[in-house]
Amino acid sequence: MPLAIRIHQPGGPEVMCWEEVAVGDPGPGEARVRHEAVGLNYIDVYHRNGLYPLPLPAGLGMEGAGVVEAVGAGVLDLRPGDRVAYAGGPVGAYSQVRCLPADRLLKMPERLDFQTAAAMMLQGLTSAYLLRRTYRVQPGDVVLIHAAAGGVGLIACQWAKALGATVIGTVSNEVKAALAMAHGCDHIIYYSREDVAGRVREITGGEGVAVVYDGVGKDTFMGSLDSLRTRGMMVSFGNASGPVAPFDPILLSQKGSIFITRPTLMHYIAKRDELLELGAELFAVVTSGQVKIEVNQTYALSDAATAHRDLEARKTTGSTILLP
Ligand code: NDP
Image 1: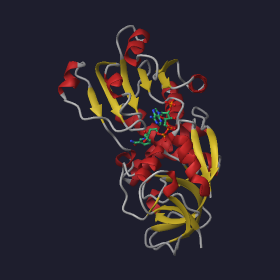
Image 2: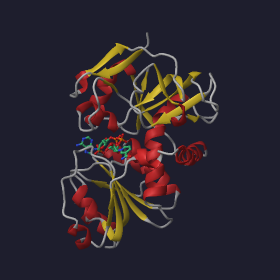
Image 3: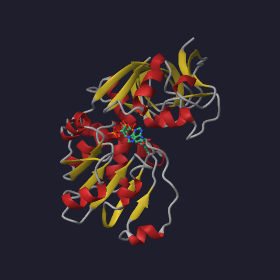
């Protein structure tokens, strides 16, 4: 029987079990995929520790790349042998083989290898909707991207730069700063020891940024609001440091009639057409070389616990993959 990571209770990395799972034939509208590589994402931590609760027992993982083994009734556009990649639900990518809805799969461009595809789908589609849909970055915009050397960070910084923006990135140390600078950042702020909003005002001549992309959450939220220009856009899209505390909406008026949104990828790719369009935009910037995918950590899937520990300890940079 194939193996998969499963959890029977929420908790630390130790709750992940490597166990046999029954994977039958794909049902109507499904495909069975044998994974060649699986992507690691921060949402996997929230699923594991219960911040985003799952019905238990549960699989983990939202992203993978592999080969179609079989398709169920009604699946007309995929065949056994097709190379596919995906991101988003349903959870369960931490597995050697799985069945999932065929309409969630994208055929991989020929030039893309499985490891790159598994590394880029979730963080890349996220960067795509953040920069191209939630707030459409324009040439000349100054943008602030938190955790610039992380998975989403390295992709989003390169992409924002390619769109003609001036990119300010935040990081926790010098090694990450060098990496972020090599991937699109024009300015770096060390957010653990510098006043982010103060530095942003210095860099922008007092004006503030057009948009903040904040996946860090609790620790950065107020500094992000204070970094915006009048009528700027706050995009709060994650909680790596913990969830954002409740706040009074009058703050948005006081800080310059600013906008705030708290989006999730799932609502930007819910329809098949949206997924295909966003996927095409992502594949285009990667295959053209405008955005380079940095797979900086690789672990055995059976050792996902170590990968989670390293991610939570801020030891990783760029993207991370798990090999089944
Ligand atoms: P990253 O690779 O960016 O890892 C998280 C990074 O956050 C760390 O490397 C660290 O960088 C920074 N960080 C700051 N404070 C903390 C802390 N207290 N604990 C841990 N890390 C911290 O992860 P991802 O690229 O996978 O995801 C980035 C964020 O985006 C996450 O919050 C994730 O949930 C969110 N996300 C949201 C999506 C959506 O649609 N809403 C989709 C995809 C991701 P440093 O050391 O430089 O501070």
